[in-house]
Image (spheres, rainbow over the protein chains, first blue to last red):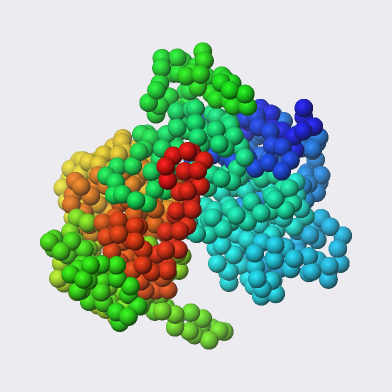
Length: 326
Length: 299
């Protein structure tokens, strides 16, 4: 079975040990598989641990973060891989598209050189070959005039252009897996859909698997094949995109879909948007029961007593909610 | 100057300067902006200085208790308009009439009494408040500047406590530092701070952008509730037409520093005239259609 998956995360937990106070478990026992060429969306609100998950997959967590569990990538166990081998893997086999390219691109290096750096780190190309390759990559991410962009500094580019540069960097070595952490978070609506289209095209042309992280269901609609919904450090529901959008099972997913749908319908003045009352729990003090229970409109007695195990109400669907079994 | 304004209105409503929409004709206009222009200088030092027109001859009016949304892509000039109306930027030309008084050219000293009437909320609540302040200090700061932080310590705490409750937070958190609040909670604090002076006009510059959808819905509801409770007038700046269309009475669409189309929200959405509006609407509709297709809901 494991051979079918490109990456297989099993029971992954990440704990941040702050100097003072309780250690914080940002990611708590997550299991997830991604097949080659598959696009998997992680849907969840800020603070639910989705960016920590992205960092953990690349083994790029700040010092003080302790991760446990297994990450099997193409038969390699990343958790006990030495740093040198991880460095050879990052950018070449698994690449990250960061949330804010304004922060991740070195401001004193031109776009062409920034992309070339990735090639130089991993592939034995001559300077001329590299230059040629960078220009091809620039065309590939949708620049009409690669020459101009090649010698532009990040500050001379717009937000959308910078995100394309970050995508070109990530795609430079044709990795098997792209991890995109809120790749459209800082862009306006029109640019958002352009970037999503570009990522779709990349998967089609190169068969790259993509793990995309977003808080906005509308971004994932029509783009991801499968979706895992995260809440307070745990995955609460997994299903195909059509299932998650068409028939969400977990009360949290259901509420999220109602909100998203009310926000993208432009017609009709509204006096209230549907909303979920309250806030997600403080990761420092997590109660024993279901983490969504205090905000859930369908809570039962059992919900506050213990965490719901994973139920399989239908083949290939996982949900952690007592509505679907005891 | 009206040549660039595509109006979207029946003839009887389009008689204001530059063809701008008058808002609610029966109500009193709280804010009236006439011919607002602002240029920035780019370059300098080694590069040639170039004048860049951020906003050119913008006209609009907002009636008391109503919401006008200015929408447009990044760089269309909407934030510059917001900053000029809140007078944290001085316009180069034009008038900003607040209940009949032009504040466009007042000095910072002369502006002081008007400041309590107009407050601004920014996109990034983290950056817009001093992280070392407690919630109490952040909310009380504008009161102190306006010399309205009167009463003894307990009375002042009670006043801030009421504001904190009003934005849906617990008064027990009053002494917590700002940095301990989540993104959504900080935006609530920013609203409490803006409301401390009991303003009539709130300028909301992408105040819902960058928040999670669930937090966005909560803050949007809070804005709607506060508006109803205090008869607040909103100037709402956003790049997300679909979201603001449901909260605004009037929408102004900006492109290239100009307001290219103004009209009642329903009309802008159902019958867009200008290419910029059509483009914004098209991208909103594509998202909605994708969403509807996959959820099986009617679009």
